[in-house]
Image (cartoon, rainbow, N blue to C red; front, side, top):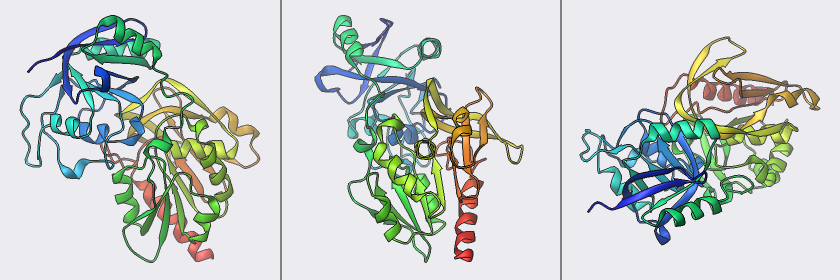
Length: 365
C-alpha cells in the first residue's frame, strides 16, 4: 500500500513523496540531512555507523536494484535516522542478492521516503549547508516544527551511541593490533585482520589499558559526529603518541589532530561519496577516494604545535586536509577511507604502510 508523505527542511523547503522502510516513531523521522554521491554501495552506506544522527539522501536516482546480502553489512546494524531516494527499485536482481532493500530498512527500523527530487534537494544542501529535516505522513506544519527542533550533530557525543559495549577479537597471529571502536566498519576490521590479531575495544578504553595489552600497533577508527565531543578519546590518544605505531581513519584522523593540539572545523555539507580526488603530497600521485565525514582537521593550526606535524594528503576539490603525519613518531592518519566499502581501492596501500611501521617498531625493539 502506497503511503504518501512529505519531507520538510528547517528552511521551509517542502518535497512530496511516498514513505518506504520502517514506520518512524510518532510518524515523523528527523535528522541532519546529508547527500551521498556514490553510484552503488547503498547497503554499506546505510550500515556505516558514521551516519548516526543523519538522514542520507542518495544522489544516484535508482537505489535497491541489486538487493542486499549478509556480507555487505558494515556494522552490527544501522544508526542513520532515515534514507531519501528518487526511485526505489521494485525488483532486485543480482547473483549475490538475498533480499530487497525494503527488508533491510524494516529490520533495522530505518524509515525512508522515495519519489523525492533529490537533484533539487542536493542543490539546496550545497547552497545552504547540511541542515535538519523531517519526513513522514504528518502535516507540513508538524514536520517543519520537528525539523526546526532537530539539534543536528553539533555538540553531541554520537560515538557513545555506536561503539561496542565490550572488547572482541578478529583475526589471528602473533602480532596484536588494538583498534579503537569509534564506529568501526567491518571492512576495516577485515583489512586489519590481514595484518594480525585485532582486539577491538570500546571508545572509552584508557591508554593504560591499551598499552597493558602490549600491542604492535593501535588503530583509530572512523565514527560519527563532532570530534570535539569525544574528549575522553582525545586524552587517551595523546598518551599513546610516541609509545606505539598509530594509524587513524576519518574520525580517528580528526581525534589524532585534536590530540596533537590542532583544531577541527565543520564543513558546509561534508564529503560523502566514492569519487573524491585526493593528492598524496609525498608521492605526488592522485587517488580517487571514498569519503564520509562532516568535520575536518584544520591544517593551518599545524604550525603552532609542539611536535613536527605535516599534511600528507589534500582534497583537490576544496583543499581540505586529507592526511597528516607526526614526523619521527610512527604516527599517521587520513581523512578518507582506504578500505573503501563502498568505493575505489586506490588508497589501500595505507594498510601496508601501517604494516611497515609495525614491522619497523618490532625490529627496533
